[in-house]
Amino acid sequence: MRERVAPHHDQAGELRRIVESRRRGVRGLSGLRSIAVLSGKGGVGKSNLAVNLAMALSKTGKRVVILDADLGMANVDLLCGISPKYTLAHLVKGQRSVDEVLVALDNGVLLLPGGPGVQELAELGDDAQSLLIDKLAALEGVADILLIDTGAGIHRNTLSFGVAADLTILITTPEPTSIRDAYGVLKTLAINTGSKIEITLVVNMATSRSEGSEVAERIQMAANQFLSLSVAYGGAILLDENVGKAVRMRIPFFLANPTCQASRDIAALAAELARIDDEVEPPAGRGVKSFFFRLARSLGLGG
Image (cartoon, rainbow, N blue to C red; front, side, top):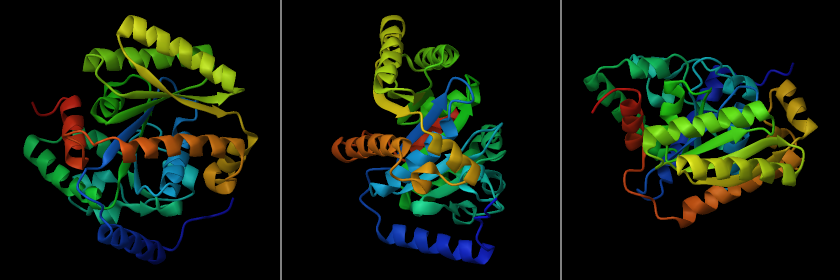
């Protein structure tokens, strides 16, 4: 297995260079956009899609930070072939700063490893929570997009990220169990938000464009009819043997094979998300602090 972890001092130097260059080039004060990536069940390629979407968004010129918020099976580090030294838990405990916890990935993407820190965030008192969120506001200077890779399923802590984010991307495959569980996520989100939530559906591992469209139409019709919920369709990521090869190499497929079908599909999704981000006027309440305060409330903290 090819080891891709740079010596710590080299990695730290690269991270400082990225962070400093980003802060010198801060663009306006419109606020960072938070995007949560959810799925109804495991095994649908959610984390792999999140990592490669981050790489593709970065290629469009967006500054991206990934928050690995999967409490049970955090694996963004495995997919990228790196070994984080610190996690959000060190930040929660006041042991490290945001800059020290961030890890530089390829394509200029930064990783904020969540680990047990996500659960500890839910257990903080109001004062400690506010102090932590003030620290996390440092992300505003280094990112346009905070992409959150959540756990699978309808656990409250998982869906809290979807409720709090500016946009939720829901991943399903064409398998009946995956479609059923994706609808279960939609139902729970609709109940918790009064159907006022922005959701984009992506069909992963589709065998054809038509199969992806058929799956999306079924879910869209059911969500509209029974949940009064409008679900956008972000497209299909077609089955591609290069995805599995890249996972075994511990390299994102978008970097390992930029011209393969899955890479072209993820690039199309990223281009559309970037276009919307550039053209749509940012709503009030967008940004790092707003996201984490909403997350805290959704986790049962605050008012």
